[in-house]
Amino acid sequence: MTTYELDNERIFRGDLLLVNASHPLRAACDRDLRPAFPRWPKMLLRRPAALAVRQTLERIGAGDLIVPVSAYRAPSEQKSLYAAALRKHGEDYTRKYVALPGCSEHESGLAVDLALNVKRIDPICPGFPYDGICGEFRTEAVKNGLIERYPEGKEGVTGIAHEPWHFRYVGWPHAGFITENGLAFEDYIGLLQSDTEPGKPLVTKDRKSGIVNEVFHVPADGGKVTRLTLPDNAVYQFSGDNDEGFIVTLWRREA
Image (cartoon, rainbow, N blue to C red; front, side, top):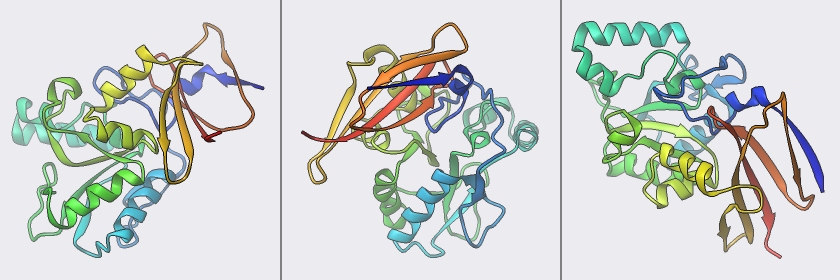
């Protein structure tokens, strides 16, 4: 067994941060950003998200059929975008489709807006249908850890209108579980917080590889660090939830 000490400031960092109007970003995302699209070098994402998007596009042979509309946004850019949308479209429309400054996933470097490459692309609501090459992207994207962040029917949970063009990196196995069970990301984080703990994980298995995935939530201790003892025969990843603690993801081979 190995004991890990997690700095409680890490609650606000990681690939599984919940970012919405009730959970604004607390840590700046100004590191680990890199181009996600060779032809658009100014479209930046954090490394795992950039890799996931690029691999998905390459595997489906998207070429120029799918183009990026928006990736990482600096806080100042999000503020300007929100103000411009208010002036042009009004408050109701803006609150449906543009996150409040400080509360946008684009500021995390983990989210991207994509569009089917047509002559005219709406910068706020780009077209990204469910068939053709865009449908192929959705299917492959989940395997690479990407989810459609704002699904239809979950507007009351996410606080954002249905956005079929907005994809968020969460990694595997999270993307698979979220998509297969028709969850919003808020639903998933809530499930982990309420129904899992060390020794009581959410378990999924990959029959082909024999890999067992275990995911559980650990509330942060009251001090500066949270201590957690875990077995040695597994690989772990830790992420803050941007709320009250940490999400631990474990990979091991089935015994």
